Length: 209
Ligand code: MN
Image (tube, rainbow, N blue to C red; front, side, top):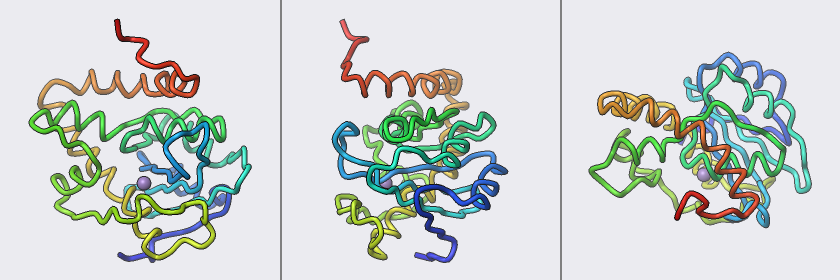
């Protein structure tokens, strides 16, 4: 892949990148961590991509508790933050930095509500169907804690996880509108932060009987 549109930052966005991203309507976001449990596994890398394909990666330091420019972007009410399975990344950002991400679009929820003809809602499947691109997920389970020495394969993988999200958001939104499910989808997106807070306090299935 072309790494020329990729910028790597330490601990937070640069002022210039923040301003660039603040002028976008939407920003795609993904995170890489040491594992799936935010209470145990630290956040290592945050990837961002604007609608022009400009990718930035923020390397998170061990023990780091603040990222003020990133927070400003994630909480900016005029900028939609697009994730695939937002519940996980939003939890990581809330747990690590106290960031209250808003507003949110989740391509996984959108896919589940729009693509009811399948039960495959993973990123790889979605990118394949909507963008006709084959993602290489072989770096998915790798050591992201070694964040200052990431391999070209890891950088490429991490960039690809954000590169197609905004384009897929447009397509999924059109499908949801066509099927009269767009309003309900937006209501679901507004609930994500509530699910995140429940997850982080270990509440499970409180909506079940
Ligand atoms: Mn990822």
